Image 1 (cartoon, rainbow over the protein chains, first blue to last red):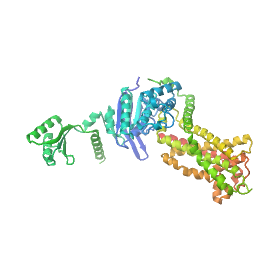
Image 2 (cartoon, rainbow over the protein chains, first blue to last red; image 1 turned 180 degrees about the horizontal axis):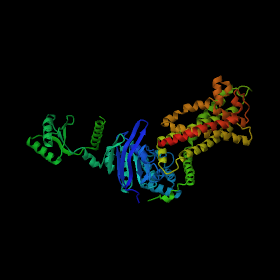
Image 3 (cartoon, each protein chain N blue to C red; image 1 turned 120 degrees about the vertical axis):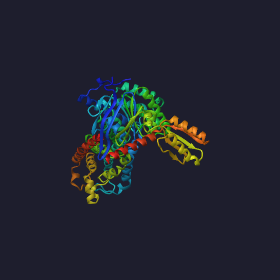
Image 4 (cartoon, rainbow over the protein chains, first blue to last red; image 1 turned 135 degrees about the horizontal axis):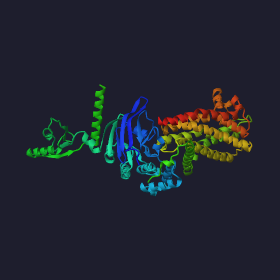
Length: 325
Length: 279
């Protein structure tokens, strides 16, 4: 029985290193069973947050509960209920993959017989049974990371922390690890992961908290985040560079509200934010036919998470500057 | 599946102590498995001291008059205890480097996020290092015997001499843990050899300090490595060496006290450094 509705709850987390403020009042609420992403640039405080929640760092202010226990007052109870996969792959490269899992099992205070059984189960589950008796130094990056993940799951943790799980992996390794994380979450494990890869957050997470300078910027679903920076954009790609001014005028008329289109002369594209995407699209299409203008492409698209992120960071920073001024 | 339940969690001091020891042994076993899987570790770590001792015995030693009985005389008896002491002195690198590696690779983070006893991370390391150093000494004794070295002391004195060597190594474990946690990465840990080299060599390991320039001789004579080297020569009943410094008259006492002083300074430093990981 969960002791709280939330696997992770944090309020006003503060952490300073000398004069640097790593966390400046970060709040988090992660319900059980969710894959929750902390998204932000390097230095945003993501890793610090994970280190505090996994009892590796002391808090300077605020409070945090993981699996219903206070990280400051009950760290030992927290440690029995979490798994941590840090930025580096923390497996022993010399002893075999199986011995690695037995080692960690023993250090999780699992008895010898159970540790062996659990090691074999996890090797099977993570597709490492065939290399069980080989040392990880011969493994690919993706395989080592999978073993690393397996080691954090020995006690079937209530909350799994993944700090940049695919940083440093090649594309094949990233896909492998993504698949493994997706399998885990199908089994209901609560995951808190940090990433600065937007596609990763988009792909894996149910909800995303965007953080910067140790503060929350916004929290939403991946789709919600994309919607948040405004609506869809209408994009027209010209067939001829000379058509660009005419197309820009067309787009501005269709979007209305006195909006200005963005014209990219390199890609010959005109794009503009629109409130009613379908109406604007049909209007432009009709005008193009009426004026017999040929275009290379015409369409509606959602902003990418990259654009969402840049936009959110910029607006938040503007707000801060205004407050400061 | 659930492997945990709260009835398993006994937070009494007795239970904590029991787990501290159990976890420590688990870490020791990991290290022993390392040595079994990579016996070449010994070759890498002992290669340098062995090559150096062979050079001194067969190249420079023939010109050195250590006992006043003529150049080259008694040099093997002088240099072999020096080799033992120097290997123990360089041993802090064998502690510092793995500690730095464990920190760099996130191993220490993983351990500290687990319900294991945090102190086992370092006590396990230290115990494994003493076992490692014992094997080092057994290998070196074998080499010394092949070269013709013999202990002239009683069995008890000879065993006592090896006890003093491990006593020095134990003190240097705290130095190694401290330095391993202090340095930023393994690259910097590798550079610690710049520290190890003069520490091992500016000593009575290969040449008597009274043959060195005055100030250097004084440093060499007071070096903890010299204290241990001198003490074990005495216990092995090596031919007496002319001494030029007060401390050389009290080597056994010095070999007991020096490591104690080092431990008293570096054990708290290492503990503080370890606790600072959570700051």
